[in-house]
Length: 229
Ligand SMILES: C[S@@+](CC[C@H](N)C(=O)[O-])C[C@H]1O[C@@H](n2cnc3c(N)ncnc32)[C@H](O)[C@@H]1O
Picture 1 (cartoon, rainbow, N blue to C red):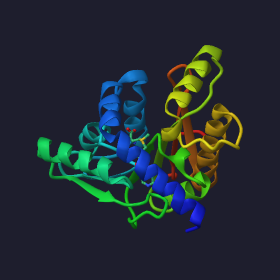
Picture 2: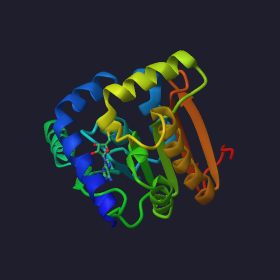
Picture 3: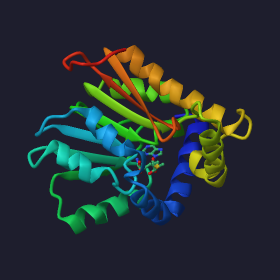
């Protein structure tokens, strides 16, 4: 891993570590807004008994819906690089007494898993230095990969809101000061993730949420039906 990537990862760990309690509260308070998290789980289209990995699981806001989807015989594996996020996810799992959720503190860009049924990642891939390369690797690991990210849409007011949100949380978006404006950077990073899905999977379904400012891309290998490229 390059020195650049190491320092980027360290920055992510430090910033998300410091913000973990606030992020946990915020993510839970806004969990149902726009139906994004529910849409991601729907798009996973997983059967009971499946194993699903969530990369960059944070404090575990998606776990209840993921557990419901995999059922009592399935497994959820949450992976995050920030210790404080994994700690919060771990206490959630302990508090609820969930015995089919496993947590791993690791870098999702070099995934510590061999093969699973499905992968989901919400608001994470745009933090990677090379989203296309990482998502390509995920596609080699699962038949379904679902990714949600912020992007500029067609609604000017919503875009202004998204821009303001990025400025308030600039460190959490890990925006580069020399790579153009915030919305262009988000667009470029999200496009890179989608390119990986398009190249690696048989179909990609895209849905937009919250006035077009959040996009969910679901890539599937062709054992699934009803999808379009
Ligand atoms: C914006 S939060 C999203 C958390 C959760 N997915 C959600 O939707 O609430 C981004 C999360 O990605 C994690 N993350 C960022 N880069 C990562 C990497 N390379 N490997 C694993 N986790 C990473 C951060 O620690 C943080 O918990």
